[in-house]
Length: 202
Image (cartoon, rainbow, N blue to C red; front, top):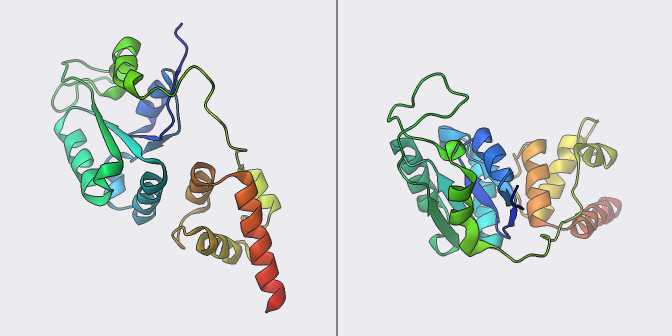
């Protein structure tokens, strides 16, 4: 089995099965648009914009009409100079988990073989060394820090989002993903310390 390719910048795909498939090929942060769900989710588009501005993004959607619509939408809302667009070929076929062909009868990202996917990402490999990992925040950590599941946690989340420059109406799960992609653990702790200091002054 080939080692996963280390990719520095985050990758955006349409769905969770695309993400699962890519995680067997590349070592990268992978975000999903939830198909057309990205059109309605303001917090997701705000998060994608923030991540693109800081780290750049690789966009990989299916080669069908739906994938093109999602790709064009991302082009319209994200900084063009921060995007890299990768394309899977238009190949007739059906993913193993599906009982029927897609509308256009084309394979989606999840249906492609490892070598095709590796070839797409090879130009963007960081090197042989492991991708530097941030100290990943967890839901348990957010709970311990009073940011979820307790009295006043919603207000504390808003204060943290304001401090971190994230959308104020972001869900706890989306906030966790954003914090892990955009900040180090030390930066997160500094945000909490600043908020605590501001509360003491009031």
